[in-house]
Amino acid sequence: MKPIIQFSLLLLLFVTLGCNGPIGVSSEQLESFETKLTAKDFFWQSRYGSYIDFQFRPDGIVNALINGKADSKISGKWSFDSSSGELQIAWEGGRQYASIVKNIDGNWGKITFESKIHEYGDKTLTRLKLLDDRFSEKK
Image 1 (cartoon, one colour):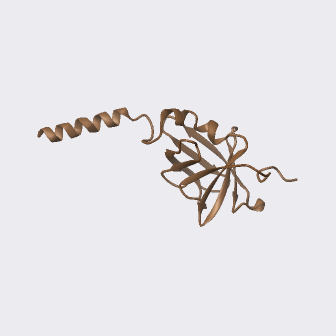
Image 2 (cartoon, rainbow, N blue to C red):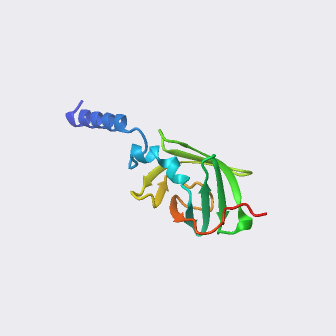
Image 3 (cartoon, rainbow, N blue to C red):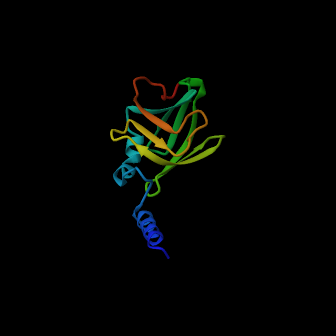
């Protein structure tokens, strides 16, 4: 076997063994992902023509508003695997999505995934301060 091929295979082996999660995301970010995702006083928004607002709760519930409209509220359940960096969301009466975290901004202002987590959003979630009661239960 040529030395360059041997070196390439050895390098590939080291890179593969050295990865314990998604490339570009630190283990510290993965460990604190759930806490940051469910932080009180914040919500997440994704845009793809339309937009969708997400509120991830610590109890595993996710609420979403399509285009910010209260009558478009949908709910589901979410789970995160910190070892693989995979977020899964099962929307009530709808599709289940799974996507790997690709990048997290240093200040947690944006999270980018490998694929979409809802049909109305794109691959990026932007963190916004919750200034109103858009996710509160209306009676």
